[in-house]
Image (cartoon, rainbow, N blue to C red; front, side, top):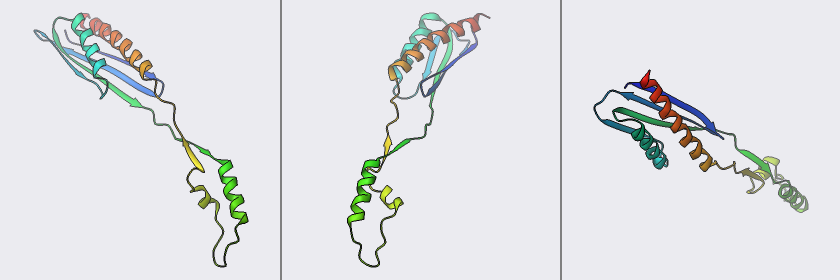
Length: 145
């Protein structure tokens, strides 16, 4: 009744891995550890194990890592040009330096951070649920061998 199985994959920018360890035991005890917000998926995986096995102590763990992506920025050229034209019309008093490019870039709206594509939460949940099913079958094979 001892065994180990692992299923890993990616869904968009998300890397994930299911792991399950099983040791001998009289009854069936299933412990599940999943990231916050995925409790329902953890309970589905627990139910899969409970339907497949009658004995053993199983520890099921899901780890998730989101790929860090550099933020995309966009230069609002129209706003920058408008600021440049406005500054060209202004006569500066003696002792005041004209605005520099780095000063203009600090004006709100000249540089805009673009939103990254949202995660496909339903696609991720679907991939994780399918992998949990494969994981339970892999554990059954490991316990039989």
